[in-house]
Amino acid sequence: MKLATRINSFLPKYENDIEKVFEKFNAMGLTHVDLNYPEHVKDYSAESIKQTLDKHNLKANGVALRFRDDFINGELGNSDESISNKAIQLCKEACDYCRDIKGEVVTIWLGFDGFDYSFQIDYVKVWKQIVNSISEIAEYAPDLKISIEYKPFQPRAYAFIDSFGVALSMIKEIDKENVGITLDFCHMLMKHENPAYGASILGNQGKLYGVHLNDGYGLNDDGLMIGTNNLIKTIEFIYYSKLYKYNQAFYFDTFPVIEDPIEECERNIKMIKKINQIIDRLGLEYFEDLIKQNKAVKVSDLILEILK
Ligand SMILES: [Mn+2]
Image 1 (tube, protein in one colour):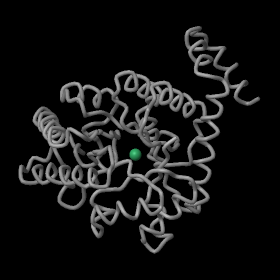
Image 2 (image 1 turned 180 degrees about the horizontal axis):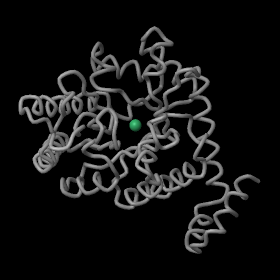
Image 3 (image 1 turned 90 degrees about the horizontal axis):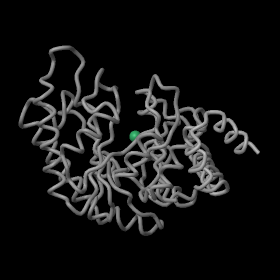
Image 4 (image 1 turned 120 degrees about the vertical axis):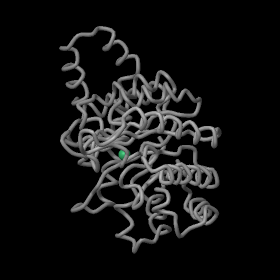
């Protein structure tokens, strides 16, 4: 399994020294790194990051766009053309950086494309603008996976790409070989979606480009340790990732604040390995057979089997 975690919780613990963080990642058993662009790398050339990754036996999974400052009223869908063009430019730079560090996935989360009020935005115009922008980025970097990560709300009251259905509909309209979706477990809970549903549909279509694991209670992006609240949902989510041979990193998108980030990450690693073992112990055929039966009571049997 390719494993990565959120860097932000580690940086303050290591005087914001990214090399020390990488060293610890490797020691803990992580294999991959996802870097926020430009946030994490503004002081480092791609070459130096690649060298530091190599030195600590890590690989880049990819980069994730982080839009700040200028973009608070929208990124690719901003009504000010100079700002939306700047957002496209930033995505293209992120692609170049990703390629240079030998990453494979550029994750685009449009945190500010959305609205807070009725009559605030022109939905059709924004929709078309985002579709055209992502198409342009995908054509710019045909060798990379361009992945849309969606979230229902926060920081905007309503995000533009807010759900599995909207994200799926949008990638269908974009219709590019290299455009897919990143599923974030907590984001899906916030929308009352079942994460495995998305992983199944996207996995089947070869469009599952990213898996962000965490846990929560649905009302917020809680970023809790994986498997601590919705264990069976997490097992089902990972089952479909395995079934469809998801081949990018599993990224722990968790936010330890009170907890020590190292202890917290160690638990995430142990948990995903245990879940992986359980799925292997029962076998993919066991699950296929269970689903074929379409019997609710058999789900209770499965949980008892897991608790054995
Ligand atoms: Mn995420």
